[in-house]
Length: 298
Image 1 (cartoon, rainbow, N blue to C red):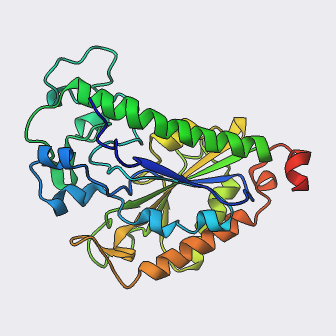
Image 2: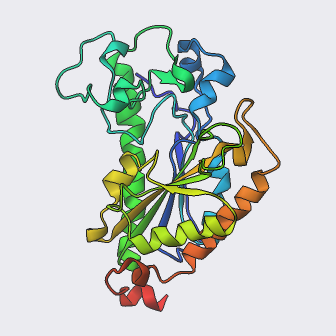
C-alpha cells in the first residue's frame, strides 16, 4: 500500500544552525495535514476529526531551533496515527483480519479507543465508517511511526554525544480541566512518571517558570507522561524526559480551534521557558556526568 504521505513529509525535524544545549523538543500530536484517503474513510466532519489535535503546539515551541535546540514535529494528525503509544497497540474490533498475540490489544489506551490507530476522537466519536486492514496499519506504523521514533532517538543520541546527557521536552495540550472558573483546575500539567523520568531539579525549575507567570501547575495528574516520556526517560543513563501539557483555553477556542487573544502570550511564555532551559548548566542540575571536553570548548 502506497503511503498516504508519498507526496509530502509526514513529519519534520527542524534543526538549529548550532546546537547550544542537549535539549530536544518534540510535538507529536500537533499535526494537521489530513490525507484525502483518510478523510474519505472517516464519518466525521472536518472540525470533529480535529478534536484530538494538540492544535498549534508546534507553533508555541517554534522558536526552539532559532534559540539553539531541535524541534521534531508531526505533520500527520493524531487521529491518523499516535506515536505516543506503543507501536502495535491496536483495537481488534477495528480490523477486518483477526489480530495475533503479537499485538497489544488489551491496554487501557486501546480500551478507551485511543491506541496507535485511534478508534475515536474526543467525546468518544467513532472515526471510521468501515473496518481497516492490517496492510493499512502496517503502512502507517512501519512507514511513519518507526521512522518518527528513529528521528527522535537520533536527536537524543546527538545530544548525548555532544553534551553527555539529553533532555526530552514532550510538548502537548489538554482540554480545559474542571468546570468553568474552577480555581483548582491546573493550567499546566507536568508529567515525569511520578519522579522516574526526569531529574527533580529540572522539573522544579520548569514549574517555577510557569507559576511565576501566574499559572496553576499540577504534577502527574491527570497526565503522568505517555509512551515517549516513559520510553526515553532514563535518568540513570543520562536521558531525562518531561511531558508538558498546556490547557488549550489559554491560547485557543476549544470549540472552533481558532487561536484566541492569549496565543501570543503563551507563545512568549514558552520562549521564556526555552531560554531558561537553554541557559542552564543542565549537567549540574541533572546531577549527570561532566560535560565532554569537546562540547565544553564549543
